[in-house]
Length: 426
Image (cartoon, rainbow, N blue to C red; front, side, top):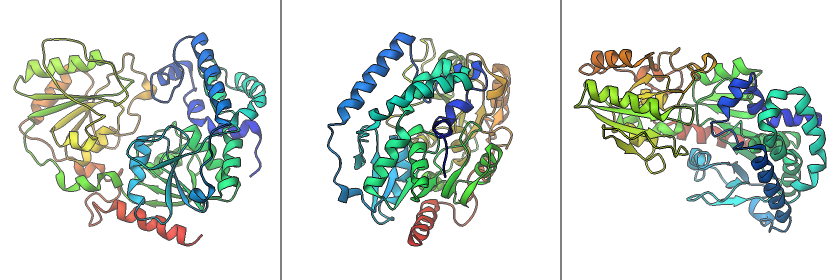
């Protein structure tokens, strides 16, 4: 499909643009993993100069042997989580190969593609900067760095794909700019694309547009339909990463262990106040705190001792086997808890809660998590359920298609079968 330069890069940066509906939302975004902005403009410009110098020296990088990647099914990954989400395909799909643009991912045999000629497209940068500043001033004010980073991604993706001619591209991330650039380039070159969902969807994501999309459940499809036109073949297959834990559900009738979970949007101080409140009301309860793996902020020091789950060493589901109830805000761990029959509680832990960010994933709306508005309500709810832990896992069926069916625990098998069937027709 013929598209303009501005249409192409609006698609590549769709997540940032969607978060730019107002300045307060975008500042909120800049606390998360999505943002690359940090510090002053001078600091950012310095980073941009370092990035460009690195790009130039990539010109002299060694290109992988064409035979290694030609006519292979590329599993395009941008993080360890992405690689883990697709790992079950490596033995099932013929000629499947991990490909990344970033650093090699420990534990996975990835082939790194150097963007050797990306720097040659930076003559387009002034035009792109001018256009984004005029059309999206709020976005540009805070995230001009992302335009600098994205410039040349699509054109370089076209060059790389023409050179290696993969059979297909398989993604587990549909909103990262690297992934979007390669998806657009693949579509324009007639290379088939496959998407396997690996995390909950929110309204800031780009429209769903792959030749084959394997979604976890009904809610994912509904969310994508609310975002925009849904294209390609859609199959709901459940949640592959849950397969190994379907038999490890928590059927305890009491709540003795509570988890408090945060991400970069949440306040460690509010998290600690929750811990203090629970300890004061129920001193016998064990409390295990877990922060997002990239969140290095410590909890405030206080009188209450709390156990820590290291998210870099302990998987989410392994952590959930050690608690009976969890408290979190906008995090997919609430859904994962619900599937494990661990009682999920939604509590707003941001410094300045925004109405637009309430129930971002629809967990409260769809009955997955119980919303408590304040500390007193939280303690009252804990008192009501601590000796009568509710059975909650059935509420997750809208998010995981196979919950409570004979196919539960077989999502990996179903996904691999659907991908094999699709690729056999190419």
